[in-house]
Length: 454
Image (cartoon, rainbow, N blue to C red; front, side, top):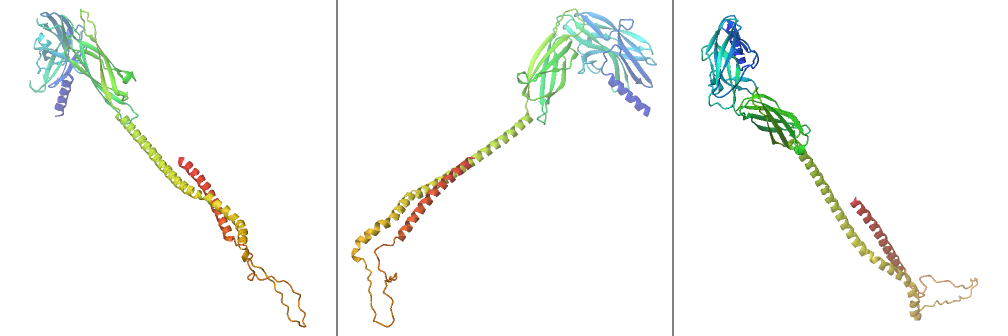
C-alpha cells in the first residue's frame, strides 16, 4: 500500500514538473512506470547526434520545406516506447516556452511539422528521429512558434492516465516584410496610508502586447512624478525577454514611498527589439505614453479639516469675546452718560448755591441799620428810678446802678440773623460738595474707560 502511494505521488510530481517545456540545452525527464524508473532526454540533432542547439530556428519562405532531427536518449534500465508529437507553441506569463497539450487542437505552426507517431528506444541508447517543417503557401511573414516532444503515459488508461513529455521549440520565421510593433496599456491606483505623515504606494498593471509579426524583447522605463515634475523618480519595470506575435504579457508591480499629490503623472517609454537571427535588418520600435493616477490625500485632508475647525472655533471665540467687550464698553458709556447727565444737572445748581450763600452772608449788615432807622419811634429807653427808703438806724449801701435781667431788658432794635447764616453755610457746603463730587466722578469715568479698553 505504501509503495503504491509513493509511486502515485512520484507520478503526479513528475507530470506537474513536465507540463512546461524547459528551454535549456539538455531536456530530460524521469518518471516511474510499473516497477521501473524511466528517465530520458530530448535534444535537437544534425542527423548523427547532438549538435549543441537549445532549439530549432528556421527561416523559410512560403511553400518551402525543411528537414530537421531530434535525438531521444533513454536513460532507463529498460527499453521504452515514446510517443512523438508536435503542437503550437506559446510563452507563459513567466516567460517560459510551452506547447499545447495532447487534448488541445493546434491551428498554427504545430500543423506544419510532420513527425512519426512513436519510437522505441533501448536502455541507454540514442535514437535520432527526423521531422519536417512545411510552410504553407499562404503563410504570413514573421515568426510562428511550435514545438516537438517525446512523451509517455502512465498511471491509467488513455483518458485518465498522466502524460509526461520532454521536447524543444521549433521557431519558424517566414520570409517577407517584418513589422515589429508593440502596444502598451497601463492601469494604476494609489493606496494611501492611514498615518498622514507616512507615504503611500502605487500599484500598476502594465500590459504589453506584441502587435507585430516578430518575436520581441521588450524593455520599459516608467517615470513617476507629482505636479510640475515634483519628486520625479524612475521605476524599473520587469523586462520581457521574449514575447511571440499576438501575445500579451501583464506585469504587476508596486512602487512604495509615494506621497499623494492629488494627481500623479506616469510617463512610460517602451522599447522593443526583434529577437532571433535574421538576414534582414530590422530597427527597434519605441513607444511613449503618459497617464494620470489620482492620489487623493484623504488622511492629510482629514488633518487639514481638523485644523480648519480649530481655527474657526478660535476665531469665533475671539469675535465672541470682542462683542462681549464692546457690550461692556457700551454699558459703561451709557452709565457714564447717565451719571454725567445727573452730575451736570446737580452741578448747574452749585454756582447758584454759592451766590445765594454769598448774598445771605452779607444780608445782616445790610438789614440792621435799615431796621433801626425804621423803628426810631419804637425805640425803648432804659429808665433808672432811684427810690429812697425811709431813714433807719441801719446804714444803707450807697446807691448803685444794677443792670436789668435779660428778660427785663428792652430790645435795642438789632435783629437775630442766625438762620440766615446757617443757610449761607449750608449753601456753601452743598456747592463745594457738588464740585468735589463732580471731579471725583470724572476721574472714576476716566478709569472705567481705560479698564474697558483693556
